[in-house]
Image (cartoon, rainbow, N blue to C red; front, side, top):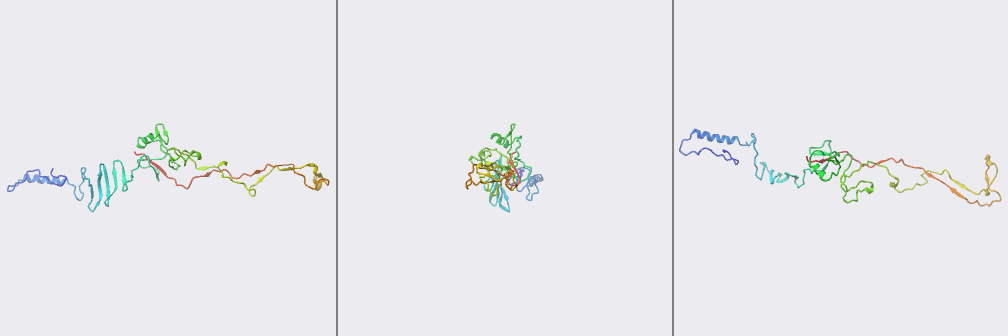
Length: 291
């Protein structure tokens, strides 16, 4: 080759011998070799472009004006982007990590809050639909026994429409069926409730003060012995006559023989359901399908 990867030209013709005439054919051939080598070079000002992969050493490349910034190889199938002398982003065939070593590549099954309507590539809305196409998430859900349900042989995605996610309660004490909720230790368990109507048993203990609550008593009467009372006739225009104590009866009032009363307390309230949702804003949830 007239030009190797290190920038060295090799003359294919025999070397010229001192003191001998130089043939035009030999000169033209050498010049052609040099011209061909230069033609296949990448120019410094970027006028020409590489036609094949340029192999780099483990040191990679950097910028002449900033030798601490560039790209270099850190391990097999692993490249790092360097800025200011430090690796800020590392890419491999399995992961993408930041300067602190944290993965920034989505994990299959990862759920994120999303503010737009259409899920980006590789993601799907958490809308409870079936995963029919082959994907890493489909495989994982089937392996997990379809915790969010199944349609035929197709696993269902978690359905977060109008719902909030809660952490799986492996303690078995924080979200339980005893409170009228779902089993918090079951992945995929869900319930839907935006209002609540209190039953009598759920109301706090309370009293009804007589000064503020109306009481109706439709059948209240006092029975008394008739022998202690005498009629005075139709006094005051009453046809049945008034009753007055006779002169022969004791001065003390007779004892009552019985009291019957069936009062009722007027009902209050309406039983209207009340809202139990906090202040909120509606967004989408998306899950990483992986394909």
